[in-house]
Image (cartoon, rainbow, N blue to C red; front, top):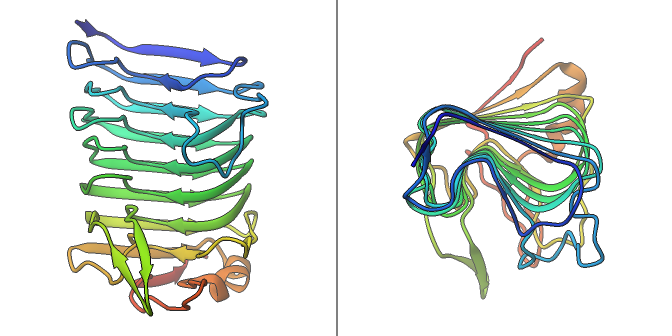
Length: 263
């Protein structure tokens, strides 16, 4: 079943999943999805921002279902979530247009401009307010071809910022063992504003700011650029670029392939 477009606003209650698109390959969205989540959504006794297994997921796209336009996702007020995805979930959750995620409030664990397993081509993830542990411009469980844009204009980040995709790693002796090599074939861009608050919680086993994918080295087909909005932002963040901390301390020398000051 084809749907022309979707518009949904959720301001209260607790939910395992909030989806802008359809659930299942039998349905798809021809145009855009527009999702607003705010108020006191997921303000329940079970919520724990450190609980990776808790299902409090917000999707701009669908579950194994395509969106042929853009996804537009706004998270505001006192909403809470574990994972936010600009795209969808499942291998068949393609977004043919752009994914647009804007966070202006609330408390969250992770936000991805891309998908959890689906196909996306251009992602835009903007933090204006609220508190979040980590931001990724790319995808969680798949690579992508296209571009990512992460704009940290306000709010608070307490763990890490990456322009690209996430890859799981476990410590093995004095080295890391990587479970995957997902990345972006294209451009990954991170913009940092002096209005943002990036204060790392050192109880986490790793933290830092990277323009690229989370991996042991920089991919040759992933072009990563980190931009300071102004000289104040450069002063604030230059010492936090590329840091990693835990039982091991290591540095990705090409994590910010190009660093520049906008003004």
